Length: 191
Image 1 (tube, rainbow, N blue to C red):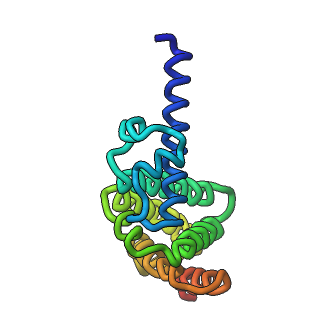
Image 2: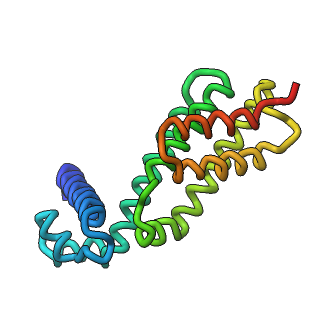
Image 3: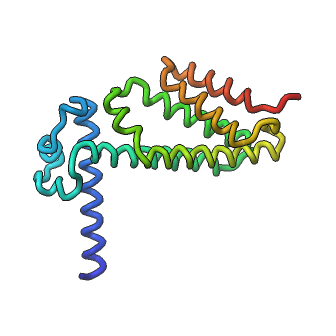
């Protein structure tokens, strides 16, 4: 097959997959996880059920793929903040603030959906990746004198991620901002 034909087919498959993910997420938000069927997803996407089954075996697998895409987007957002110009302390604060806001947006998610989405290797891999890159940024901060050196960067990364996970239960953006400030204050060297 010509290269253009293959690229067009791949683009079409990607577009169909993306549409399935978006329609499914919207339907689950509206009807709950158990209120969504493959027939309803196919209808909402404008494809046949047989075609849908070529992409995904069930609703759970669609939601898992949607979540993997969400996590990837979050990691890209955080990596862009980490890699921007500025001191290690400024970049670290920007990453911690963005992570806390991501956690805050999860507030109020359905428990059944959370149980499905927050299990599995993709979540474990993302958490390890996030902890490692925050640890590296903390190590830069230690080297520049902006971050305390009496606790290892890996332990500080765990502290940050656990502390900021609490943003998911906070009522307001102002509360999230205060949590980030308290967490960042705990990273400063004692003088």
